Structure formats: structure tokens, C-alpha cells
Image (cartoon, rainbow over all chains, first blue to last red; front, side):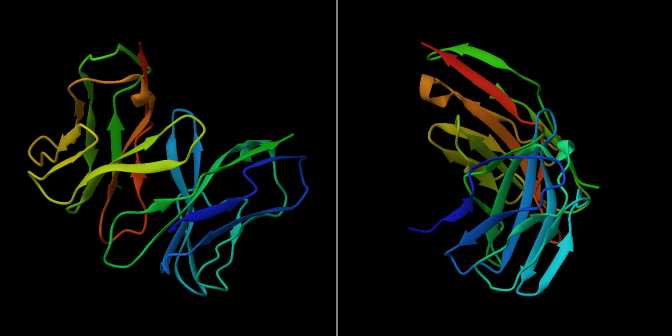
Length: 112
Length: 112
């Protein structure tokens, strides 16, 4: 089944404790992206990647890192999480020439 | 930059009522337009899309027409069901961009 998977689905952590949210897709998509969803703000892009070893900032990149060492994986790293990063995070992917993005199930993060 | 404005919710309806969610956009190019739906506890699913002016997207009884003259992409369904209760997001993608720009989302609740 074609899908985007994220892990974990739910995470509670404390301020300053480094964490990684994994994202994997099995559709051989070149493009991958991370969004955060906050009430009243919709989804905002954090980082995106056009292919392996190619990443760039989105609209709200502060406090986040990403890497793209393999085509299928695009982890989101919070090196020192803060409470304002409490949010619902979505990974998405698409292939070139296609505008539709496919979303993962989301990761709900609470930073205390 | 590109932006999307959609009507604020929440919207509460009775079964078999008519649903309209307004969406207008601002874009410098010729964007593609999307409606995504998020059912309770789930990720985002593409509901429908339109890639050029006057195109009509449709799926699951929902329709939206790309109106370039009014920069709008309003979502409609003639007879809603309880299972249509969800958050609906209007979004646009400019082919030269590498992201989706989302509206704030509209929460729809359908009562039996």
C-alpha cells in the first residue's frame, strides 16, 4: 500500500530534550516536506526537500533541523524543544510533475 | 506571497443540509487549488483539486469550481451526512513553489 508513515504518533517530552520524528514514504517520491498544524493557522511548512541531500527552509524553520540521506526518509529533529513547538506535525511527499501531496497520519507533540 | 482565506467555523449542520465553505486566494502565478479533509484523529486526505481556471473538482458528492475572476474555490455539497463531520482545508500550490499554502481550516459538524 502506498503510504507515508510517521513515528511516533504521540509524544510528550520536556523542554530541552532532543527528539526526532521519523517520516518514511514508499512511493519513490522525490519531494518531501514537513508541516505543523496549529489552531487558527492551518498548516505551515517547516522544511522541504527536493531530493536526497537537498533541503531548504519553509515558512517556520526556527528550532528545527532535517536531513535527507535516503530518498524514502525525511526525519524532523528538534534539538532543544520548547513549549511553543507543541503542535501537530505532518510529513508529506509528492513526485515531480504532480502537484498533489500525500500526507502522513500526523505526530502530536506536547513539550512541557 | 501566496495566501488562502477560508470562512471561519465552526459550522454546525443537520443531516441532508446544504454545505458551502468559502475559500478565496491570493497568488502571483497560476496556482492549482485543493480541498483537503481531516477526519477526527486522522491525517489529511485530498478531497478534490482543480488545476486551471473554470475546472471543477468533485469527489464524494463535494464540488468546487476554480473561479479566476473572483479568485475563489468554494466547496459545496448538496446533502451532508454525519460522516462528513471533519475539518476542511483549502490550499493552493504554485508550480514554481515547493509548498502548499493552507487556509486556517473550517470545522464542520453534522448532526443526525
